[in-house]
Image (cartoon, rainbow, N blue to C red; front, side):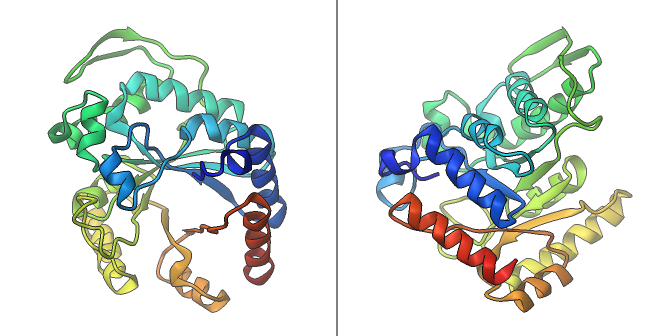
Length: 281
């Protein structure tokens, strides 16, 4: 997600080197987020650029053999669901089934406008796309009347690396996101949002005191609709400064944690990720 300076982070060599370092250090996955058309106001007040997640992760996949590839998160309403199904399927197959799709409805109204997508439809488009993607991955012919498309009999090949297709983790902090994770997902990916919840159009989660009641809500909602609780919850590692902290997160039902290592250059970034691994992994 670093694009500055380009010579340090925006080359095939840079992506490959960081990915290999993460794999060698014992990390489970690397991730890239999705901001194809961020507006200047957002960028000038704390927003950030990013490489296209599926393209960048394909370079990471080619440089590694075990490291999993996470879109954290792919804004599903930005794209036609068949295009998303094909591009994610391609990375899933070529990586040998290492893709995890972190997916969310999005929150940047100007970015929706730049891409020609109605911001007010984002939740409906999200649910529609998740259903269509799984249909497409099934290998069966798909006939579907969408809000803005009509599929008569779409058949997608190749088949995914696994029968069920790539796992999908639903991003977002709201009860809507939690219900979507139960109804349509394989995991839930909330994020710490102290001070930015209003701008991000989501519920504020300042830490575990806010997160744990929502985990309880997810479990109760799953029980009420007769569905299993999604097996994975991905949260920020900032809540854990030592191994005991990670163990506490695990005891609360959190299965993955995300990390970032702010550094001005690639060597510093790799050194930081190695030192964290030496201490914690």
